[in-house]
Length: 273
Image (cartoon, rainbow, N blue to C red):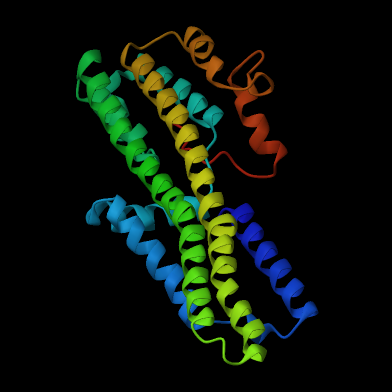
């Protein structure tokens, strides 16, 4: 669970609610027609921008990605890859077939190695799968970006509708103020939907897609080195540039477990027997 997303939403909703409640009656900020205009119009415009299947697939994928956190770190994959290549050099690549690897993408690459596939075939299969996976995540980010773009516009649209209705009935001057307030509520709804929910989630999904692309590139390189039964020391030197400077091992493979021990958690990836 990504605590940052939940905490951000909770703090944002709490602050806005308290600001409204301390200044006036909360009920005056509730307007069902205005809410329906913003929500309905925003989702209608977003569905027009994307294929129907893409919209309904990307929404749950995007929400899941926004509220889940990556447990495994790049250094964990490097450590596991070094363990796997040591076993492969000792017992052959076929011995890696029964290894229980949690990451499906990494597991698929190891299975291709155990099946005796050549390097070019493995490269083609894994890069294609990575491209499709990243594309799905990027579409999810674009869906939320489209929601963030459309929500303020439909908020303004609702305000204009309210102003037209208000100006069409000017017989009672005392009703102008309340009618104007109701008209402005749709703008408020649109701004909150865009800037508190949609746009932050879109930015988070874009960032996760970038990190996922980097991680999968690392996994592909790990698989390549395993397929070639690379020397473990040379393999570590090839893979370490994927890590920040402070996370790079100095003196041996055990350095990759330092982050897990210091944080009080165990390394999440399977240790090879």
